Image 1 (cartoon, one colour):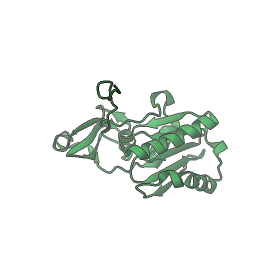
Image 2 (image 1 turned 30 degrees about the vertical axis):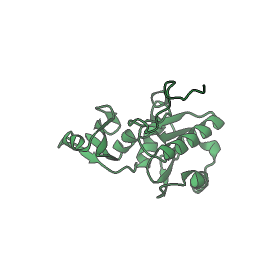
Image 3 (image 1 turned 120 degrees about the horizontal axis):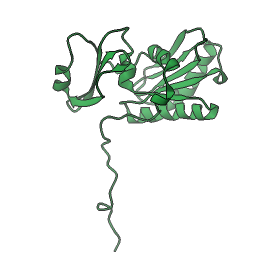
Image 4 (image 1 turned 45 degrees about the vertical axis):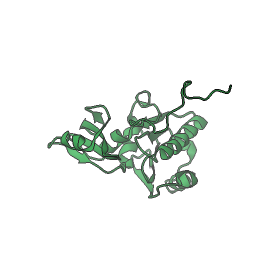
Length: 202
């Protein structure tokens, strides 16, 4: 059975990454190291990536996108692009949590993802094997997170996903298990006003 042609998008970190998995199993990745401006170049980069693989939008069979934690603005751009493309072509769109996506960057064995979340905290998740979660994603004090890293495990501290590994994972993953919704882990700093805080006109 041929590999479904799959597109992957990652805008959660200060980098724009796109990958396409061809029917022959080859994964091609486009990378731009940028902190902002993902939206302005995403579709041009996608067009170039598809063209150099002799593909068009009509060839894409499924789409995957990282869902965070990560840059709030970056996540919204990636999710909006993936959902829009999926809606236009009626394709399955998979939301791959970023910590899980990062775990795919090692070939085998237990792996722990520990990302600096600033404020003396870290995003932490342990995996029994790449893509197989052993714990829930957590926000922990940085020292506590480091104490939880087992000696037997591979440790990933870079926020940059191996998108070739992720697009291969997404090509066969169950889309029902990976809805394309943002996964922030840390609560947003801005809180919506409740009725008691909204000033009333007299």
